[in-house]
Structures are given as C-alpha cells and as structure tokens.
Length: 469
RNA sequence: GCACAGGUGGCAGAGUGGUUCAUGCAGCGGUCUGCAAAACCGCGGACGGGGGUUCAAUUCCCUCCCUGUGCUCCA
Image 1: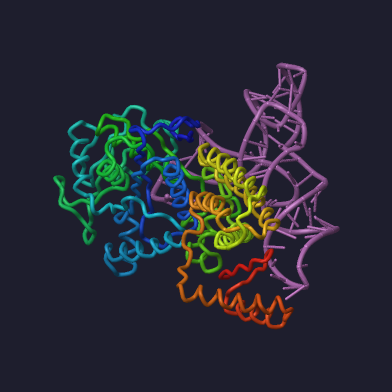
Image 2: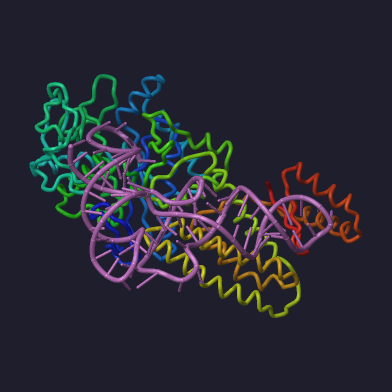
C-alpha cells in the first residue's frame, strides 16, 4: 500500500519499521470544550486508517492522547470556577460519548498529558544537557536555531517567517521562534515540582513524551489535523530528534479541514457545529458516511444538504444489509443458482477493487463507489432470486458485512432480544397469511401500526424485512 | 510577503495521456409491486483562462486568475 507523507509531500510506499506491526500516534483534542465536527473528521479519518491497516493484516498499536493541561484548560476552569482536572474529566466523558456514537474504535491507549509529566521532565533534562534547551525565569525553551532543518516539513523559514513580534520579548527567548518546553506556573495555576521550579508543560512536549513512552523512539505513523503540522508537529520533530538522535516518525499524515462556506470550521471563527448538535438530527453512521465521501486529505464542505445525501446513501447500504441478512435466514430449495454463483464471483472482484482503493492512500470515495456497484448487483439479484436457501447467500452477506466494517459502518446494531424477534416473526406470519387471503386491510393495518411504533416493513419478492426507523 | 493545498457536469466527489470520461444525490423517462416502501433499467450533462510538449491532454510542463489554509491557540 502507499500513503501520502507530509514530510516528502508525496505519496510513497508504506513500510513499517517492524514487519506486520504499525505504531501510530495521533494528536487528540484539548479537552476544554465539547468536540465539534472538525474533531470528528480527524477521529474518523484515523479510525479508518487504523481499520484499513488491520484489514490488510497489520497489528496496529494506536495511541491517541487527550491534552488535559494548557492555557485554555486553565482559563476555562477559572471561568467556570472549577478545577482543571474536574473540567478535563467532564469533557473527556462527553467526547468519548461522541466518539462512541460515531463508531470510533477505542485506540489501544488514550493517555492524558498530566499522567506523563515525569517523562516530559526526563526529555527536557536531556535537551538541556545537549544544549538544545535553556532555562529562563519564565520557563524552559527549545533553542530552535541549534536544530538543523528546523521546520523542514512545512518549509518554515526562520528568517522570513512573519510571526508576530512579541512586545519587548517578555519571555526572554533567544529567538522569537523558540518554543516553551515548560512554563513557569503562576499563582493559582496547576504545577508540578521540577528541577527548574514549579512548572507546567508546554503544549508540544507531551506528544513526544507519550509517543516515546508507549511506542518507542521512532513511530511508523504520526497523524493529526492539517493545522497541527506547524508549529505543533514541527516542534515535536525538533525536540524528539534532538533528544534521541533518531528519526521521529517515518510518515506524517494530516487530515484536511471541515469547511463552512469554504472557510475552516474552527472555534475561533465561531462557525462550528458540535458533534452533539449534528447527532440530534442525523445518526452516527450518517455523519461517518458523510466524512467518507471526501478523501481524508481534502477539504470537506459541511452542509445540511451534504448530510441529507449521506443519509440517503446510508439508508441504501442499510436496506441492502437487512435484505441480505433476511435472505441468509430463509429456508428454501437447495437448487443451484447461476445468478447467485455469478454474484459471489463478482463479490470477490468488488472486494479486490475495494481493497485496492483503500490501499491507495485510503481512498474512501473510490471504495464507496465500488461498494455502490456491489450493492446494485446484490439488489439486482435479490429481485430475481426468490427461492434459494439462505446458505447460498452467506458468502455474499459476509463479504458485504466485512467491507462495511472496514469503513466502520453499522457496527452498533441495536440488540434485539429473542422474545422481540420471535414476536416480530409471529406478526409477519399473521400478516403474510392475511396477504395471501387478500385481506389487505389487515395487512396494511399491521404495517401502519408498526410504522407508528418506528418499525418499517418492506415486502420484496416474497420476503418481508422489518427494520427500525 | 513567504509557504502549502485546491479549482471537474445542477450539487457532492473520484480518476485517467487516447477507446462506452467513476460513484452518489437531484432531474427526466420506464419496469416491478394489491397498495406502500424499497429496488431495478435507461437518458442528458464536466474537467478555471492562456500558451507549450505530444499523433493525442481534463490528465504532463509553463504562466495567469480565483479560493482556502499555515506563518498566533486550533483536529
């Protein structure tokens, strides 16, 4: 397979350091406020990447963090009159609910910055010893000019950059691009005892510490939103490589933004929708499918219309899934069916195309188009074949389900109790009896009543499928 | 200003040096069905402007225009 690497600005073959194993680290959100659709995109993008890697047989160690200490955390906690840990706890619970609704598999580990202060202190010590960092009254800083190729990944130029000059350099930094590894904590702020006094960590050091702690000195994949490339990832590279003398990550993957009216959705522009707001109107699978319609690196324009379209597609996939499941349970003749054999063969071809699309830098739009073609063939066969025994459908059904699961769709099927499905079977039998007697009133009455209970019936070629709305 | 992305049919959005120029939604015309829902079949329609390379460019090169993003906290 091949992936786009921000470090080389090109697509290149993917080779993990250790055969069959992928070590992946993705920067997670700062937990000071509820997650919005932009966060959802990032989480979904890397969830898909993880699933695709697993689909291709890799063992994936996936670490994604929560930033639970920084300026925004402190400010927000002060505003609300609660402690930083209290705020973190509440928001983490909230975003984890969101992520679960979106079908995001839990990473192997979800560490928090505050759990790894010791690791950070270790790294900062090492950087000071090697001359890459210096201590000032206001904190400990990374000496950017000492690190060769600083900012190479994003073509950042130390001299030409137009970064805003700070008034009189109150932080006493040697160079305006130097960044804080540790910040002196002010009165009333959270702090940790360090060799340099009472400090709290700067933003970038946490990811170096956590990724190194769990995944080692060199990662296979480091990911995050495009907005993290500079300065966050550039700084991570600088401090990590200065510390270890080794390559920090062999691949850097960055997902594109969610936009509104072509502009980036962001907290500062106040043009965002929270995941919770979207989930009031659309379900998690719909939002996920909406995200998959665009390639993960490209901008994705958020709109109600786009979500409605995704909802239609979602229903199409779901209807076929339910029809298929109903077929596999059907008892019929064990006659050999040409059409079904052919469909099974095509299924193999479709899955190959599907895999090929995903192997090419996780091209989900193309994978979806293959899936649509498969669905069309399945539906075509369903309307022709009525009497086959369910066993003939098993292979096709399994393949279809496997493809959906690589995309993380329809994994949160509501549990249906034995009693409930037994009752449904009975009800459908009674209705079928009524239909065969041309008692349409009774048949329609059952269908209407079920609909008002949120259960939809569909009669297709002698098989009635029920589903929750 | 510097850097980086991108400009494809009514909309969303892949892809490719050339043959039937994905896929979905919407539109139009059919089919199936007791009805409903779902589904199926068919149709039209596109590659920002200019120049170049080539037998042939939407696809490669140059240039211009436009949009967005980063250079400050941000997924």
